[in-house]
Length: 284
Length: 311
Image (cartoon, rainbow over all chains, first blue to last red; front, side, top):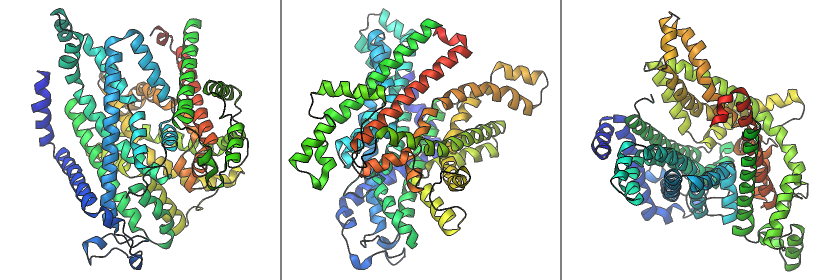
């Protein structure tokens, strides 16, 4: 029964929710545009043409729609390649942190006892270090570069999910169908993979959105602090550049990077809201 | 009661040990030898050796770890590499400016967010409610840096409503510098808080006592302001209180932009000058304060509500 709920009802609800569809379309558009521009224009986006320095936005050509930066590079192309960087950071960070969170939460919740104590101690410890400081320390230690950012994010953001999964597994463990399976002689591995794990999908999906947003925002802040992206187009680097440009009235780089980030984060926020409503109609 | 206190204190000590272990591993094992990074272009073998001696980096790892534990207990983190100032002095100088930014901002944000989410829940499902939730989501999605740059550029630079940046030690002058940063902090955090608190309030809406209050013939307004507000304040405050230790950290970005000499600025400066002893001390200090703050909250709750001890 629970398996069917995920497949039909969830998708059915999401398709009928026009906001979910719209935000899904926006996210997919970002992914496609980011991929295309990264593979087609990444070199071009970083090629300097000094004579075109700080051209204001104009409709003369598509590349000039958001103007150019100090080195005459198209802000539009930089923004699109920045989308690729943001999505890459978000995805890799999430793919590191979700398995850690699920496995530790599952093990702690299912086996309890000493294992549980150790896992809880471990995540309480990491949760006691303010996340932004831990991220800074991590990226500082690992050295500047975009790969430090997603390793740092991946290794520090699994705690919320581990907590949720642990609580959920502790609850699942006492449900009648799990007790029933055990009475029929099912081994732990079968109970975990067949019965418990499928029921964690909604937690994982919602966490995915939340952590993706967190990763995108953190990338921008770390790049801004000079600890993140280096030599790759990034919204954080663009916003950092615009700090000096604003006083001279050059606003387009800031506007393009912030606007692009706003829309992506908004789409994820709306999507995770719709998803949560499908799963928990009480939260309204 | 005493046993509960003892257990909580022991638990906190184990967490403190864990945090120390993680930070130490991060900086001394994963990070490797930082001296060339710190010295940069002035590096030579002799200077590198001096620096290793000063920070005890040539001792065996376990001796270094014990020295680090000693630093935590004595609150003496040695000297900053970049400025040669004592790190504990840098940190204690930074707490005041950080708090004068974050404390008023935090209090105002919390009060506003509780009021708005209560207001929103009062009109649940109606246009007002949806508008508030829509605005919260929009507000949450705007990048933090965009708020800061926009606020500083338009409100301070273009319109001249506020000083562009700066900080003063006399209280009266300080306020004029802090208005805009506080305002920006509020705008950044309000959306999150409204949505977060709204969930707690929603959970109270269908409780039995609400039905009883309505059945008694109380007006909807007094059901909300007297009964629902008071009951939802318990979970809200629990979540608010644990954030307080983080306030001394200030805000990295706001402090940096508005030249407020708080701990946030200390970190940003330390990153720029590759001042690893300061970053390490900062990470340690804020975590320790968080653990201690958490412990005090737990103990106070047990005093206020004896049921908690049983868990």
